[in-house]
Length: 290
Image (tube, rainbow, N blue to C red; front, top):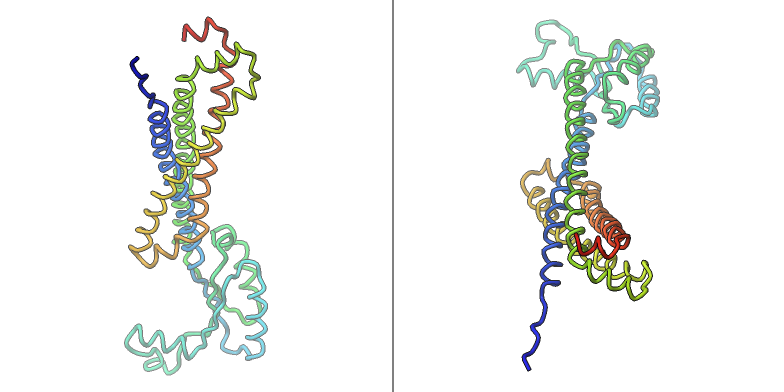
């Protein structure tokens, strides 16, 4: 008697599903990484915009210390540095290759506080609200910051955020569609098994269980494959430039890899659940006609 050939289609189907879903998750993870990286870049740029609080030459040392303490307690201030009149004059002399005091007799450059703001406050609207209040402080002669640069940055970041948000929504829709089609085809290949189990009186929960477990395994393996590829990509990116490596923080990496794992497991199991339920609702005629 001839031996029956061993079926290997199921294993090949599982491997194909894992690879297909992993590719989709890599694209999804790339979008998440881009969004989180861009957000970190935006915060970094905003927090490195200096605001110069110019001081009167007549300010007593005790008042300067009191003013610095008061400004440091403000919610919009991340860092504050005091630059004395002598240090500011020396820096200007180095930049101009000559001190202004050489031909003016005295240095016109005042002492100042150099403020670096928290990213949430480093925008045109917040500065327009808070900086006049700082300018009204005693012994403060003026507050200087790059208004035009900040306005251009606000506009560019708003456009960039809108574009990235649109891409993220489209990629989420595409990812769900592709994973759903993959799981539907996987369940469809076993539609006769589902119908046979219904005929012998198996409960829906019992029929659904092996499909859900299989979907969990496929989602987990696909997620791990995608995470491995994305982790290698981030590692190579970090090695390219010191500035870039500072932006690829554990939060960015964690959000990227975590979203891939969550999406991989949730989408595969959700799609498998609905696909199995669809076949469970079919009559015998519908099963064989499909």
